[in-house]
Length: 201
Image (tube, rainbow, N blue to C red; front, side, top):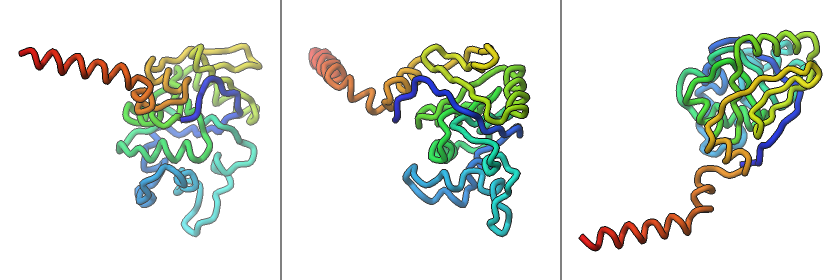
């Protein structure tokens, strides 16, 4: 994974609530087994019409929006447990998703793939949507180390929660397997001690 410490970026807003994983990446695009290439089909049925033409008003297609932060309505990532949803969002170029509530499985899949889900209060979410509507290129800061999401121009911020181990993985740019490899000697020593203890019985 890439190291994640702090991100300052403009935002792409999706005001819809209950965006499920089939909307994020439709089931017909799940044939690949590697993480690459899913971004081109992110929100495929919302970004393109039946003739394959781009829907220009959809936020990801709208040129007035850009950035590495996706802002979404409540209950983002509900539905099936497909990890491909996190792959698609990350592969498209987003590094943070902000919402007032995430489905648990999506949240874990996101964290396991270097995508940071930032859960904020509904009041703060509404403030973000309102200000981005007024200023589409407004920048937002996400500080993982301090666990704060900040609107720099407004001196407004809110803390967010994250699992301490997942936070460590993002800050060091290492997944769970790489974390275990870093502690391989200690694990091997523990296994040896456990084996010798069992041998005494």
